[in-house]
Image 1 (spheres, helix red, strand yellow):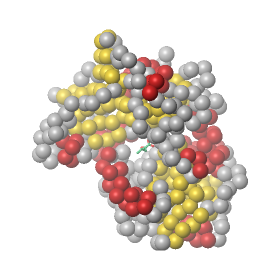
Image 2 (cartoon, helix red, strand yellow):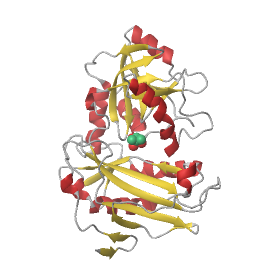
Image 3 (cartoon, protein in one colour):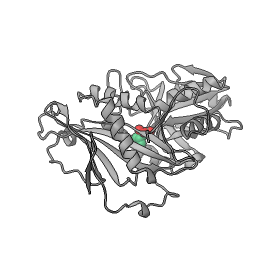
Image 4 (cartoon, helix red, strand yellow):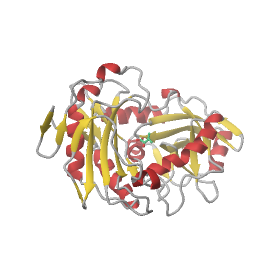
Length: 359
Ligand code: COI
């Protein structure tokens, strides 16, 4: 069936796949809703967007994205509240950040009005797929790829912007039990003047091999250190990282090497609102090792849209392992509750972060 709204051409599915999904047992990023959103950039402008059944996109093998990785993405979430209303968390931040990433990769801005109109229309169309209840959300994956055919190493003249929706529970298989991380002392994720701050697809591909090596040793994520000396702890594979030493929460300042995480900056504000002392400063491997040895390292956790707030239960560095003791009154638990209650419309939103999807 094909219908047309003012701004988006909509082709609906004939049979939903929703019955094939076990919503109580979701693996992150494995299932996608019935529809997807596509908008092409050609002749210097974005064309009429389309919402169509989720499925393959025809592309030539010479499309530039396949050769030069000219691709950026975002991660966002939508939540269904008890009254069935749908909410997003600080979506304006992701809308701005995808354009910041695009600029760094010499790709065109995607306009704010198209972004919100497309996303809200898609979420409403597939609203049955958004489940209520603790830990349930709809992970939203906006992305832009270079679609022009040709293998000259130059920016594409054509792009495709898309939204995919994927029902989600926890990102890590270990869930709330937490993850073990390895502090990097050989490979690097980003360097000064590079693309570390952008959500460029290649930033993630470059981590796969060192992360695989870490996983073979029993760690789930690598915490990246500065490329010069491997001293300053910067960011984990899919998360920003926080360290609680005594009762101070410490996280690295953002830079051109570190992603300006939406969850990261929200946690900083909520923690301050809770009266927690937050220090945004460089933090070295040696400081954290020393704190682990003298028992002042009380907690570590990662923050991200997909990961939410994931406790880190131990770390490895230079063939030594450090386990963190279970913390009573953990900051991670407190802050996770504050943030998720705001996200799911259960608590007052004194920061004005919640965004209601228009009916
Ligand atoms: C997100 O939290 O949305 C991320 O970008 C992580 C993703 C690579 C799974």
